[in-house]
Length: 331
Image 1: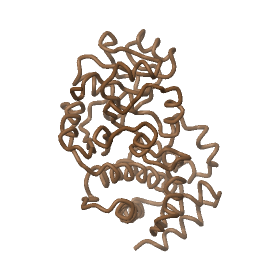
Image 2: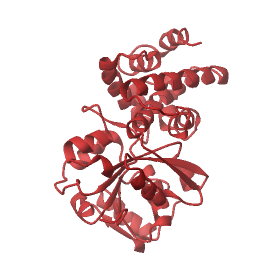
Image 3: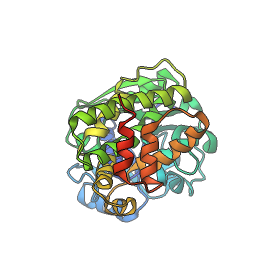
Image 4: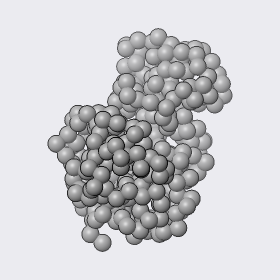
């Protein structure tokens, strides 16, 4: 199989739509899977996704749409998964077509709930995807800014360096710059943790903490991230790189960050349930908090920020005393 071959995008949300915009500029034709047939029908009729990033126009004649996951897998060589992590298992339940001969690119910045597994590990364990055929996307890259063609940066993580270079060509446009890395596990964990830290950033914003404190919070967050990733996957990595610190910064500060928005609602007094109901999109950090907390029961890394978020989201502790206690651990 030549790489990337025919590309299939898996998902119909904002990030999948942003990726489709990128791929439409680097590939003449591609496949696009959406679970709901009515969403496909509307996109074909309107020329844009009716639910997400509606300003992004597509030439639908160049796109083969599928609502059957087996058909899109059969007719694609490289599959880019961009579904929310809590729904990944649900999407794959109907899949009986083998994935082991496909190249899988995970654009899912989350962790598989219940399994407490990174997406790459999940595909390896349950779908026999070889390590060399698995890649992940990382880095600061909001879907909304991709839609506006604002300059953004992506890191393609793959243990096969040559394959990572080829895959980077899929995403390299005049507004997307790409880099490659072999640190698949580190990039994935950073993508999960930055969502957790964005939630606490939002909580503190909702509680009226200022910019001075936010800077200290983010400084301590990157230290905590480094401690955890180094414990789980020891490797010579630059934690200040764009796939780690860069992704953390944009997720904790940006007005587009759904995890920060979710946290801000909690800080303003919303219950977790009410905040989730009012959110139009999934806040991945809610699920990531519980998963990382349970994973860390094995590694026992000092993670006071994670512990504070967990206590607020899952133990129903009041945000005010929980954050006040957290501030005493900062320097």
